[in-house]
Image (cartoon, rainbow, N blue to C red; front, side, top):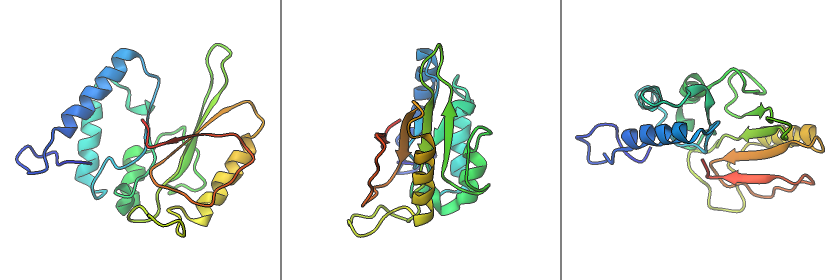
Amino acid sequence: NYNSGDPNSDNFCGAPEKWTAALNYFARRGLEMVLISGDCTSEGGTSEYELYKSCIEASDFDADRIYMARGNHDSQRNDNFIRFTAHKDMVRPTEDSPWFYVLKEGKNGAKDNLFICLAQELDSISNTPNQDNFSDEQLDWLEKTLNRFAGTDVNIFIAEHAFYHNWETDTTVFMCSQCI
């Protein structure tokens, strides 16, 4: 979201072309999936998501293998976030939930991989240790999901856009924050 798709804009830095080029690179390298930690838009508008999707369609990478956690910029229009980023294999607590998980089966005897995507629920990232960017409902769902898969010999990855505070778990989890 760091710039406009309009080459005449003062904010234009070529992001659409860079996104398409990155996806083509990933396709050439044989990546199985791309996981985005949010903010593919500036304000969650339809035209922004359409540009995001058109870049994917212009690439050689399969759109069904791109997943995104919702960032603060994307949270301004949850309906657009769901409409433009949802996939059939996402498991959500409710149909319009912006948080979800995807379980990918390991190949050739490898462990399965669970990718949990959280959704920032504040308009901006909190810089205080006294305020979370996630609702109690979302954190309860996360805890329930982690407990469900704890001890199942599944690799667990969590993608999220924002900080979270006062979190503890007995489960060993690899935290994948702000990564692709």
